[in-house]
Image (cartoon, rainbow over all chains, first blue to last red; front, side):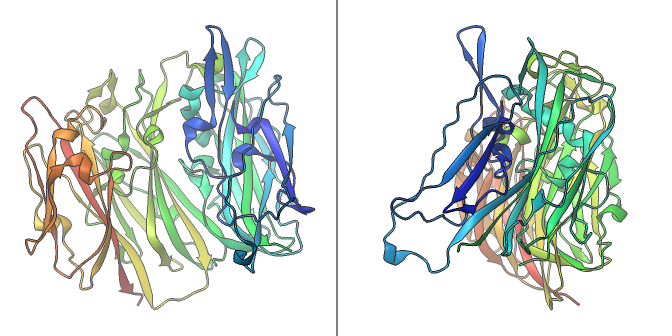
Length: 251
Length: 303
């Protein structure tokens, strides 16, 4: 299993931190790829799929006494089983007089198109102007654009499971099966061609384009993903997702 | 703050003991605005092979000679795994992925004998490098001939596919100076135990800021496995060309940390200065070789 199975919607004092539910997998760069998709055997026959990840905020969120983050988790129905999720927020105590005058809130917006379910036929997915967009009324300082491919097998006794640890590297192969055309709203190219391999646009190991820049209100990125048909009999689907991650001034 | 991201990417096939130039047209700044390059990424994919192992690293068998615009970024060919610290041993050191005809079965188990090895390397520039409109990243690749059969895999029968991508940002600035990264490498023969001055020499007319040394270990039968070599019993020492010791004789793992294979240095190398590394002899029953890289940057006039 990996973080594509769960979406998260985060808010703070009525302000959006996520534009819409974002798969946990694309909240940040890959820190340790083999922790993002795991498999623990229980007894001799039962496997528990798990994943673990961390999102390090480069600019902290300040919570006053009594305040909280509003976190809504969504089972994305990629697997039929119930999922347990543990969320931990770590920080430190701070005196109010040490509170900085300028405070920021993170912002995440993701595009999670329908999975490529039939790998024997070419297919395309195109994002809309609302997916990878600055949906706020203030500029966003984009810190990274994260792009990841998830894989779901469908050959596990009728169940759908993500690959186990030893198969994570299979994603390298999908990197060349899926190509991406990424442009900003004014047509400026991010990727050099309409068919840049996904793995070249979002290089391993971090799968993260770390180029800070400003995205003004209403601006957006447009992505098109193309799946090249393969004759190989692959018992699974490919779930892509792209996210923009940044900060804006807290109101 | 930059003017937004841009990625340049290109691939090339690399035969055993072969040479290839990555397509210049794909790595050219063919836009109306200049860019600043932040990092170069290399993904090396082997051809389909008959077995898999978690210990194969292709980053030492592919050497890159890199030039951006008029600026040399390497002093000749440098092993790509010496272009930065190791970020992820599992991903870099032999991810065995599925390729070609075959099936992925229950829980992703690969049921046919079709695998490819993938290795990922990342060269983060110490500072973004301004690259003007029309300039190109020129990358020549060279592959060693010593990747012998390892764990039942005959790499010499396979071509590699090397994909390079440059992560950059648009810019409207026109700076007077350009910060150009620079990499040098010492790739000794089996019997060579000391680098020469020219290996790590500042041949520019300006000082070089050295950021880090990278030390990688090579098995005798190919650049594959950092665990089977007796690195902890291998000694290394370093001095500059004035005879000053920068590292006394110490065990390899003390100088190049086991996780990142890297020694953060942060010191200026004067014009004409150099570093010389001396390796201890390996135990009689051991085989192996060193790859030592130096990473830094210099500030050049733009025009």
